[in-house]
Length: 286
Image 1: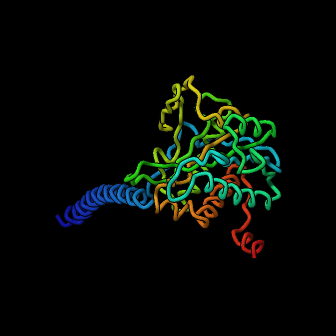
Image 2 (image 1 turned 120 degrees about the vertical axis):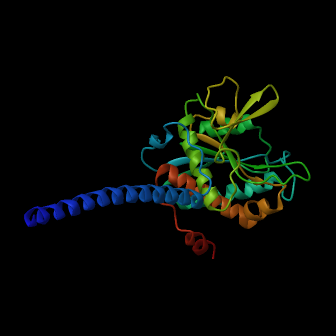
Image 3 (image 1 turned 180 degrees about the vertical axis):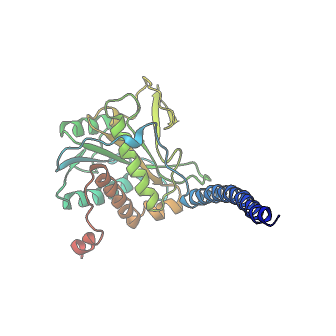
């Protein structure tokens, strides 16, 4: 009897330990899964809104070659065409932003800045500016514009329009648009639409806005400045000239400088070059 009792006790203890071990493991796994799910939800909430992504685009990188890169900067409107009117005039805002951006590009040996006309006081149609840009054989083009809304509207924020799906430089243009939207978001801009990126199509004289998750190829033309240049191209609406808050951030004199810096950093991100430090501007303007 003593012998049987001596061997039975360990077997019972072993069985109990095995049962407790499995239960503990299951409980730990459940807790771990719950914790992981909660952690990722928390991280997603902190990250804020995500920029839109086209299918497979995260694998795409433009082939850029070696510097210096030729960058065309177009200031929307000008001359007898003031553009949208609001707290600021669109043509004055675009000219100021273009000048500030050109200053960064001129200071950076990786870039050769190009312009679409000799003076911002000259009236030039989009087709004329596109032809001037095309003749200079650019590697990238940015057309700078401002948005507007009817009186009483609270519309605000940044959006940009790359060359549309089906065009030769669509993928490169979309990639550049992503850099612009990301840099503007980092500067504090609210992104409109899907991650700040949209498409425009003309149906006769009517413009149709399409969100960038609609990637079907269409025959209608987009903006002339996107269609008639042979390089990646984006048209940016940097802020609403009718919004006091927007203008204060991105359309005033200091706001234009802030926006130009964001555009410059987006260009550097596109070509994978190191941007000049922001202190560079202070040293050279002091």
